[in-house]
Image (cartoon, rainbow, N blue to C red; front, side, top):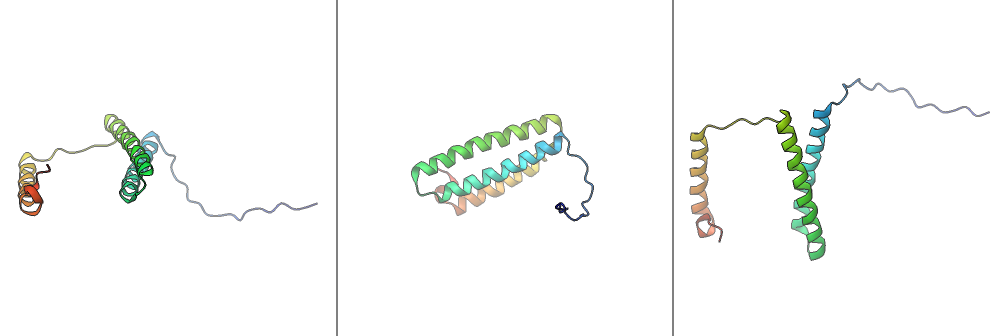
Length: 110
C-alpha cells in the first residue's frame, strides 16, 4: 500500500475576505492596465488588420474601465475632490503659454 505524499505546512497569513468594493476595484485596476497595454501595442503595430483589432479591443476595454469607474463613483467607493477654480485657471494659462511657444502652430492642432 502506498503512502500519500502531503504538502508541507506553510504559514499563510489570514487575510480578510474581499467585499464587493474590493472585487470591483480589482477589476478596475485590471482594465486600466489593459487599456495601457493595448494603447502601447497599437502604437507598435505595423500590420493594419492587427492594428485595427487591437484598437477595437482598446476601445472596448476603455469603455469597460469607464463603466467600472462610474459604478464605483455612484456607490461612493471612488471619490474625487473639486479643485479651486483659481488653481485650474493658473494651470490652464501656464500650459497654454507653454503650448504656444513649444509646439508647431502655436499648440493648435489643425
